[in-house]
Length: 65
Image (cartoon, rainbow, N blue to C red; front, side, top):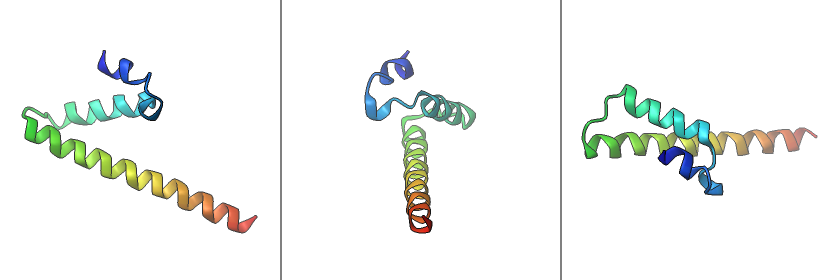
């Protein structure tokens, strides 16, 4: 239910990413708050790397045009 409610927030509206994050947490068998924090940090770092890769690809494409 929380994933669907978060979809109403524009910045967090990528529902597929929320399901992927929940899947990662479930797959890693997150049982404690500390484990949840560790998985959350890893997911944030992954999102930042993805964002930077997208921006870099856009810059390279604009330079070629």
